[in-house]
Image (cartoon, rainbow, N blue to C red):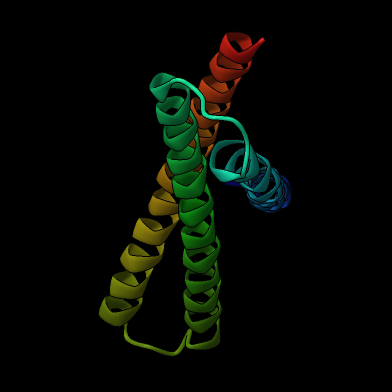
Amino acid sequence: MDEKNREAFIRWQGRTIDQMSSVSNLLIALATGLLAFEAQQTLGPRPPTPGYERTLGLLSIASVALSLIVGLSLAWNRLSDFRLTARIVRERAQPVAERDILRDEAKALGEASWRLLIWQGSLFLVGTAILAVLAMVRA
């Protein structure tokens, strides 16, 4: 790869990482608000509702809470990945075999980050869809 393409790749890779963090942070914020709202609606004091409404509410709460947990796990995983990458850059004098091991570990962390982001978004969408169904049932 020539120098110009390498610089463009590095720039776009950095933007991709920034966008991943932004999406994850947005989902964490939305999940927190949605979780508070749905917990109040489902678990708060109000007249008794049919059992299926409570079940749908609890399913929505569970899905959004899991999305929040996965999002926090993603943030922790990204931090570990950044720390490992910084270590690799700092220790360029290491033997090649040791660097390869660290790079393989960093690659695994990066792949796990993308899987976690997909799970976070999917769980959030499931929880939101259940909430939408519940809103239609209550209307």
